[in-house]
Image (cartoon, rainbow, N blue to C red; front, side):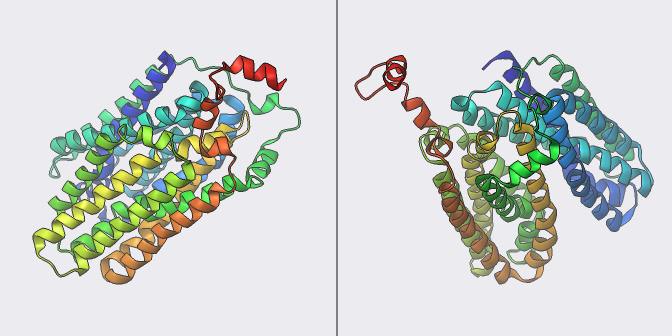
Amino acid sequence: MGAAMRRIHVGNALSAFGLGFTVPYLYVYVAQVRGLGSVTAGLVLAVFAVAALVVLPFAGRAIVRRGPLPVLLAALVTAALGALSLGLSASAATVLSSAAALGAGQAVMQPALATMIVDCSPSETRSRAFATQFFLQNLGLGVGGLIGGHLVDTSSAASFTLLFAIEAAMFLVLVAVMATVRTPRAPRMEEAPGRSAGGSWKQLLGNRAMVQLCVLGFVLFFACYGQFESGLSAYGVEAAGISTSTLGTALAANTLVIVIAQFAVLKFVERRKRSRVIAAVGLIWAVAWAVAGYAGLGHGSQAMATAAFISTYALFGLGEALLSPTVAPLVADLAPAGLAGQYNSAFALVKQLALAIGPAVGGPLGASLHAPYIVAFLLFSLGITVLAVRLGRQLTDVQNQPSLARSRVVTQSGAPAESVAAAEA
């Protein structure tokens, strides 16, 4: 791992740590501490999603034209200003505008950092790089949430102001760290004659494999991440009688499985076809939804329901650990030279759309229609498996299994790659 990649990973951890400080407590802060009510608190969460949907199409173009680092630095400064302003806001208007700035900055960080990872890693080490990114993100979120939870006091607005100030400081520290990164110079859009922003979007939409991956990504995020803190938690409380403390334990189990399993599954993932790994995730998540169904509909003891519900989140974590070294590198491998930022932003846009729609659909369904909720999302998980198999037919052998490219370094008899190249010439 080079110096640039080390700084990028530090950046991922710091940004996740800062977000972990505040995101779990936004609703309480706006609704109760500032006394703005549940409607305004709900609008704040919606503004995060809307801001991301607005800025991401422009972020992709900016990354392609200017490079990921300037875009990342601008996003970090915007997020820092939004976080600090949010901690000082006392009216609905300033809270919403601050949330828009924080949400926009946070959304743009993701494709910018992903593009920097692509620029700093060859295809044979990219899966490991993205696995490390995901590991550090979850670790940062978990540690940040844990420390933030001990700092907040719902009777004191000053404690939340301190929380948001620490988050803003994390983003500014990250500006200082990332400003020192020197990435390999990747081709930019203006260096490719005849390639315009509109043409690059047309090229992306003409890439059948990328379009299918975006559809698959939407279902992945809709059926998993979009349910964590909305539909699944509502289902757990209403159908399974789960306490709020148990919800926290379930989320901790999810993070713990990711932290433990991430590098344990990496060699398994690297030796398998990506489409088959994603298909396996669909099956694992189908089992998770079946276990959740037992928790709320199985009429067992409360202890069994609690254990089943925590196991559901743990199974989701195992699926996430398999996905992190699989999906993000595949997006990068599908992107033509110079367009990694555009493809990363497009996939981030799909992710944000799923995260916006998922809670809106899953929340009411999970709270009131328990059996239909479980059946619907179990079918969505099986749909992931079907879509992954179909995607595999659109990928080249090397796109689907990058280890095949490494295996060509030697011939069957052990001759070096140079001899192979000479013979083929």
